[in-house]
Image 1 (tube, rainbow, N blue to C red):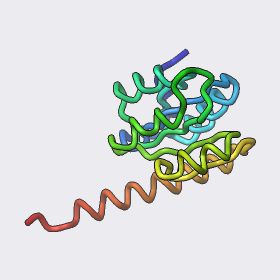
Image 2: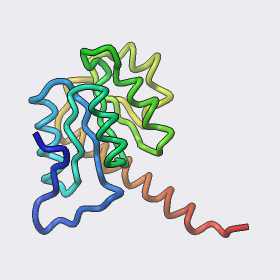
Image 3: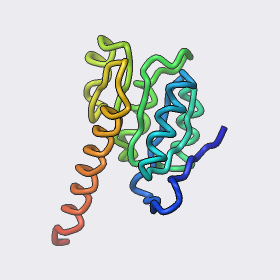
Length: 146
C-alpha cells in the first residue's frame, strides 16, 4: 500500500493540498484516497492505525486530515487530532461515533461528518476547508510586519 497517492497526470500537486487519511476500514479509506487523488489532491496514507497516521503526518505534513474516531486500537482518532492540530493540520472527523465526536472532538475539528457519508459530501467539505485555510494564509501574508 502506497504512503502517498499522487494526483492524476495533468493535475499539479500542491504541498498545501496534502491530505492524510486515517481510517481503519480499508475499503472506505481506499475509496476516499482514490476520490481525492482523482480530484488532484496528494493523498498521504491511508493509515489504518493512529500510530501509522502520526508517523505519516510527521513525514509528509498534510494540510488536512480525514480522521475516523474509532480506529480499533489503544489510540483513537481524537488523540491523533490532538497531535496534528498544533501543527496546523485541519481535521475532519468522519465517524459513526457522533456522541464522542460532539463531546470530545468538537474543539479539534474543522468539521464532523457522521457515517455513512457520500464521496461528494466529503469532497465538498475538503474543498471548502482547504479554500478557507488558503485564504487565511493569504490574509496573514498580506499583513504588514511591525
